[in-house]
Length: 183
Image 1 (cartoon, one colour):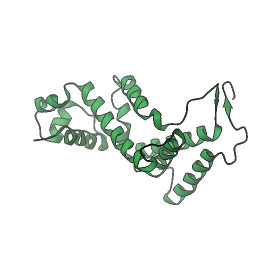
Image 2 (cartoon, one colour; image 1 turned 60 degrees about the vertical axis):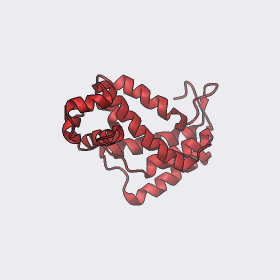
Image 3 (spheres, helix red, strand yellow; image 1 turned 180 degrees about the horizontal axis):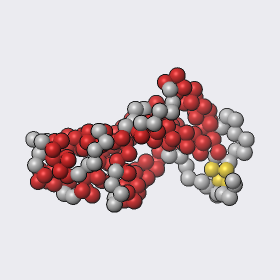
């Protein structure tokens, strides 16, 4: 008998191959009937929501290992930057974008789950420039890796990671904070 977690692993395998994830595709991949798949996820929207949660569960597991269970916001952001710049990602990490009809709902789900790891929101219209720059470096690194766009060579990965961590520490910041309306 296939468990829900196993079924979601099969869904990720479909996405990793670059195939369209449908209930039928998942049935074929898992060896279940379509009715068997529907028993676990009900609808295409239920499937996509479960896949996004399953992927984020994996991310959060990795992030908790890097940050520890009681990490503050700065430590969580550092863990996110470390993970994004050193982890292995593939097309399945872009599941949030897999279905254009569900994209807004999946985007909201992604943001809600990952926001505690993405740094502090701007307070009083100010955000540390180093924090913002490190976050953008990390976002770009994982996104390109997931897309399969070769940007960082292995020898470049560590210096870029160190630069991002230095930005988080405030090293080299000129303005200290970015104010709303700055260009």
